Image (cartoon, rainbow, N blue to C red; front, top):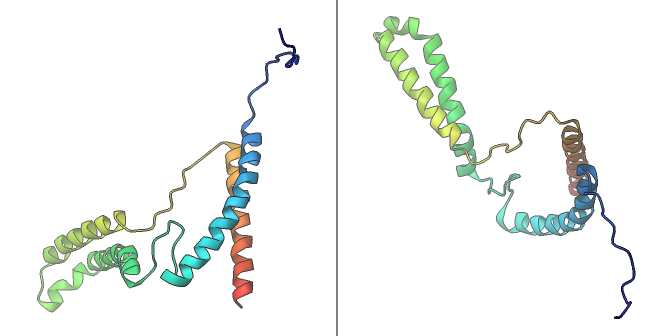
Length: 149
């Protein structure tokens, strides 16, 4: 019968969401600094990357904005379909072609490399936490821009 552990057992309450976030943030700060240093090294070697780690080169911009360009062309074709007979073309050709271009543009839009993965939230704490993160990210970006200048 050893009495080495004589402390009485008590029930503890689970930590609240805010406490968990603040604990995680403390741990994440050290990890974020290490990750930022690694990202800086990667950027110097590989080039600029987006928030999801995709290399931002000519192919990236093509994939990102080609769907938008096709959609703009399709919209213009619908707007100016009435002028098609003036140039010897069919109005139907303009309209059906614009639908096809719009659908192809939609496919490219849905397969683009960078998409914002944030979700819509109504919880007040979640919204405040997200705003604080965005503000911190902006401050870090401003500091990085000042260092480069």
